[in-house]
Length: 66
View 1 (cartoon, rainbow, N blue to C red):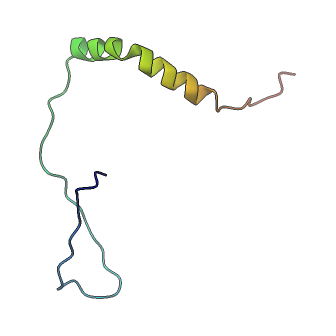
View 2 (tube, rainbow, N blue to C red):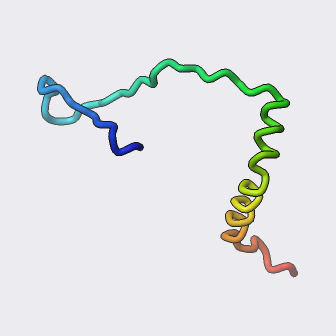
């Protein structure tokens, strides 16, 4: 979360257990078309492949290979 966002709680909130709910601002981002999605993936392919290899390097074998 960015450092410049603050949560302020009104003084009227009672002490003790309180349930806070957050409602996201309504700003629906239009979905990408399939062509835009492919372009985005291709533009970021090197970074995505490096990230996938990094994640795979943390996996352990699930069996001994016997």
